[in-house]
Length: 270
Length: 322
Ligand SMILES: Nc1ncnc2c1ncn2[C@@H]1O[C@H](COP(=O)(O)OP(=O)(O)OP(=O)(O)O)[C@@H](O)[C@H]1O
Ligand SMILES: [Mg+2]
Image 1 (tube, protein in one colour):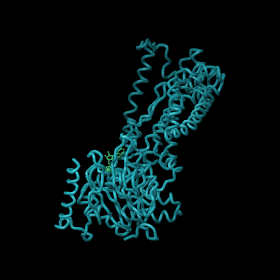
Image 2 (spheres, rainbow over the protein chains, first blue to last red; image 1 turned 90 degrees about the horizontal axis):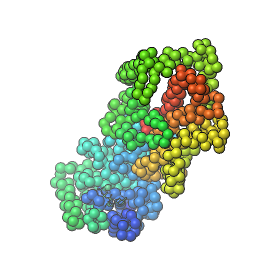
Image 3 (cartoon, rainbow over the protein chains, first blue to last red; image 1 turned 135 degrees about the vertical axis):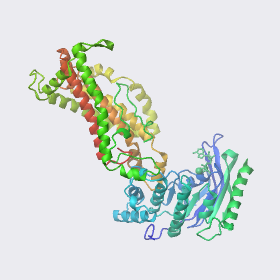
Image 4 (cartoon, chains in turn purple, red; image 1 turned 135 degrees about the horizontal axis):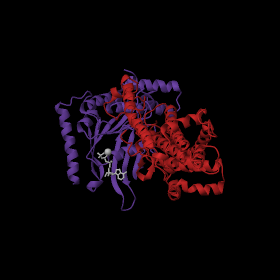
């Protein structure tokens, strides 16, 4: 198995949110309090998934950590540093990929390392290694528009990995994929996480996916449309060994527990 | 490309220029220009980049379909002139030259030896003069409208500062500028070039603004999280993403440039295709007028093809750019 990332081991980072809140729009009556009072500690190298009903602020939380949106309350740090904007230490994988359609697969992947002005030999080596890791070597010269959704998402993941991110932020990355591709991608992501040790924050609507992947599952509830700002309802640890069996009783017990939390969250708010 | 309908470039007030055709009609054998929608199109996507037997057959069938209508048209034209048909709008075909007469005239102005009058063999001189004016006016328009459009598309303040002025000036037909241009600039090259510039400026500007404003936010976010410096966003994301729209504007502008050229060359200029047509009218040489029209049409068509080819070469056939 090829090693991913830099020769120096990438340094996974902690994420720490304290009393984090977000209000969209004007500070006055016109605004929407999307999220409030979120406390979250993610250890370096941890894989944390986030579930919750639509509108509870999952994307908002992720976008604040990515630096796309400023928080309006509380503090958020990654590797003990205040977030001031987007940066290559926090790689983002979008549901709709966000690949540059005019660049080939390998150019998309080389984009980040080139921005860092690495010598071209280093860029080439990184690109080759990451391409191999996601199994797309044969498609290096294809354009994203020529690839299936699953392959495009692998390119998006590879593009982020090539930057040796301290944190990977993924917002429903597999939401648009068919079930078969989806479970293959989950296995691949698990393996990549094992090999790189990167911290991952992963938003999903699938509770099963959340349990398959996570060290801990963050269950969020509320949301502006429920009259309660989005908040964390509970954080559920997943004490199952890796290579999880989705049919085992323990797995299903966890799934049921989390599903109940998600639904309670909706009913309590309604 | 499913977005092409919303990409329809904006035209300025003069004439009805040729619309840049949808990429999918550009010919089945165009390598690299095909961009299948996301989905399981890998195999077809890769195959369609290679010219193939099917591609050539496609070209042949395109030709087979493209030819009958013009041939029939020329035939009807010939018969109509001979029979002295009167068409709607009171068009008296008897006053038209026959296709053969036009062809003779075209050969004569190109290489001489047919009619032997003052116009014999002068085509190259007229064509060169006209092409020079079109390219100069169009070049100045592109060099000013694209940067201005980028500024207006990127910065709301600039947009709000200039948009009202542009909306006031733009509806004035360029033809209406012609008399004024003659008075304030005078006879000669410069007033014609000015008119061409005016005609070309607005389509380029408006399409650049539209293209820059339509840059997907997701791509800007992707660039930011990959560490793109603010100053580089323009070259790395905005321009590539707006390219398609800008090229659409350039093509409309180039078409308009040829349209307005004839107006600009009507008065006080002795070379150029427009001037040739004007002189032909004064001498009632209809065959020369039609020959001039055909040349202008061909020149406009070739200029458009050349522009498209140039863009394709410059962007190395990358999808969504060319
Ligand atoms: N840019 C914005 N401007 C105003 N309100 C917004 C904006 N983005 C999100 N919101 C609101 O904030 C709340 C939380 O949105 P968010 O997208 O974070 O939810 P989510 O949990 O990701 O939902 P989903 O599961 O549907 O993706 C919603 O009520 C939404 O309407
Ligand atoms: Mg969301």
